[in-house]
Image 1 (cartoon, rainbow, N blue to C red):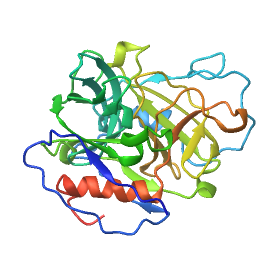
Image 2: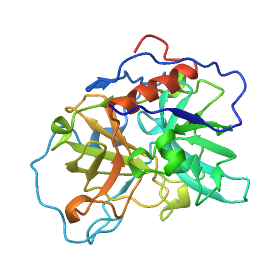
Image 3: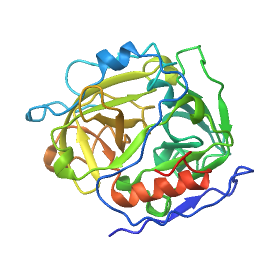
Length: 302
């Protein structure tokens, strides 16, 4: 069993209480998501998202963040609807003057999960980001929901101490419970054997289209699962780091995030050509529960 320790930046937001999660890490641990107060159906959810499993196939010959000769990402236009509004465009700022973009997603009323390098990066920030602008469901110049600014972030010791790609996981703590209105994703630690063959969805805010202001989605199958990573044949680009990698167990089932998209090139085992995410393994799921508890918890026990 891996023991993870939460590490926070030295600027905690006022009004957030600390609470420890006491649950023992277990496989197939899935939190409950919430749809929010507006239940209008999204056409994009109906027509774009993949559900269930697909027949396995071999890896492609080319390897890019956009995999293969065509870019199959599709822009999501109804970002004010569920679940797209639970995906946030991020703009990170650092004390060294660097600003960059990323993606995050709501996992609780006041808790956003993203990539570790979106909150802590020796390369980009020289350490912790100083402030992060969070724009839920941004659609180009349209901001259907108010942008929030946070100065309170967390990651895990494995990332902050050595920037281990298997634990490239971060958290943004908000002062306001925006998820009560917008909803939040379920997150789950699911065994590698069960994940194999699922079709996954990735949606976020790339830099090559809209410069981090437009949300793009692509779906395809899981190609390989290891103890700590999941690899998939899904087109992405820089700026989508931190995006949710989710499944629908069947058509009409709610989304379950099983990984945090972080890498577009390199690090694939055996020459496998795929983009990848740190998996939500049991220890990561326990850490997510602790972060949500720190931010006031879910409305009911989950």
